Length: 372
Image 1 (cartoon, rainbow, N blue to C red):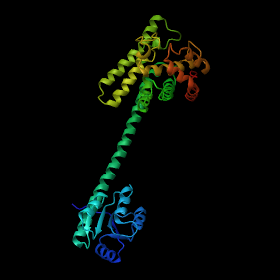
Image 2 (tube, helix red, strand yellow; image 1 turned 45 degrees about the vertical axis):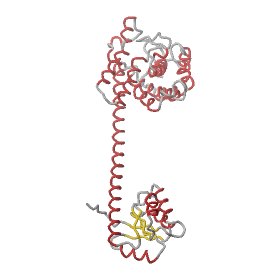
Image 3 (cartoon, rainbow, N blue to C red; image 1 turned 30 degrees about the horizontal axis):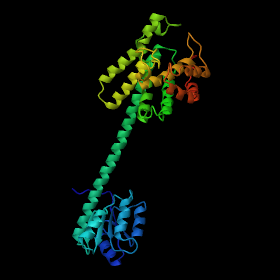
Image 4 (cartoon, rainbow, N blue to C red; image 1 turned 135 degrees about the vertical axis):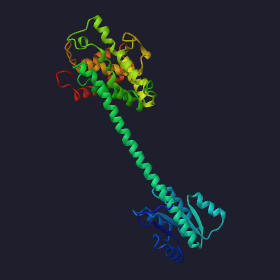
């Protein structure tokens, strides 16, 4: 089936012979729009203009740029590479024809051309070009649509994570913007460490993005803690603290349950990080943390990274049982925990960017009496 065009296709005739141009123009006028160039240089100028031709009839033997070099330049330029080129030449050797086709020409017709054959070949190559253009445009549309849908899914995913993390906030009305701040803290901390010898292979840009998306779920397990403990206006006793510590395993178990129902690698990987964060953000480098009592490298990297943002934000935030520490005091407390509470390299990285933590704390400070 022949593909139709909205307007007449444009044929560019490139030949230094006025007689050849006259003959070809007379054959094609009325069927196509015709443009003419008598040199390869002029042909390249016409092709570079806004109204580029749909097909080029190209002579080989010309002064200046010959047909071969003209074709090579056309095919080397992404803007003109898709324009079909048909060589029209008196050269009849197989080597000449092979050379032209190797340069990217679509066809090779001997002079003088048979009018019927010339028209048939032009029609065929225009139809092929139209089909390629259609498929290219369709692919570009589909790629754009996939990108748009992917972005939408990403936004929905992010909103869902924030909403799930906010469940903990609705139970603990003192946390305020805690999850928003900690999400930003962990990003700049991970980015700082991405060039460190210990972490650069694991902290890829993709992993950092997943860490940031996982951070809001670090306290999701608090939804399983009784209000009498979660909202107690004072310090917890020993038994209450034992119950409070279970928010780590409750959160991890909830995330693992979700992971079992998702057989999609990116989300499975994301939920794996989220599970590590929920379970291990209270573990300590020296093994005195909870719930597992892991130490050193036993603690998943995601948990070690989350520990500092979580502690820093808790220190600068006012609670009914404690005042809000200043930024300087909080930095000093974390410094004292280097190598005991915190992975020493991660703590050192924090110390190098602690001023940025202060900026985030100020930007997302609580407005209801809590926070920095």
